[in-house]
Image 1 (spheres, one colour):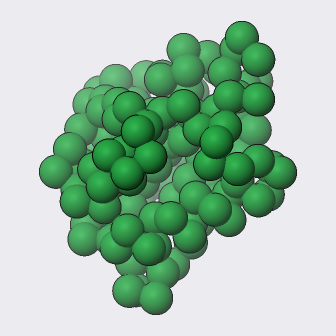
Image 2 (cartoon, rainbow, N blue to C red):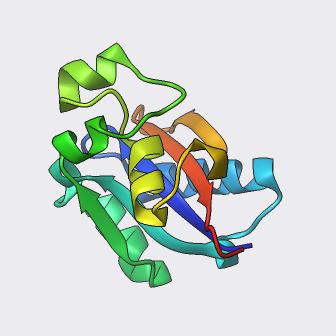
Length: 132
């Protein structure tokens, strides 16, 4: 199976926090990092050091979307907190679906939340690519 990871995180989250969140999410669906083909998030995170490091370290292309693009995607878990801070009701789920060019039916992990040892939160959503 090939998958896309949608990511959300607090500003300044560590690489370790993001990697742990990803590994936990992958374990839930019985996959490894080898299945990941891309990362996706909101464009407001285009300078987030840990996300950029993940992309570079694993060779995963990074896709960024505006709040307006993300807000157009129907998601199973909209959040008023996310809407208030980011201008869209969802980041991880919507970004993953946009990257995979699919709908909710391909969302195999809606929203895995993790709080790292650094006190920062990370969210991972996983979408199965349509051609798999």
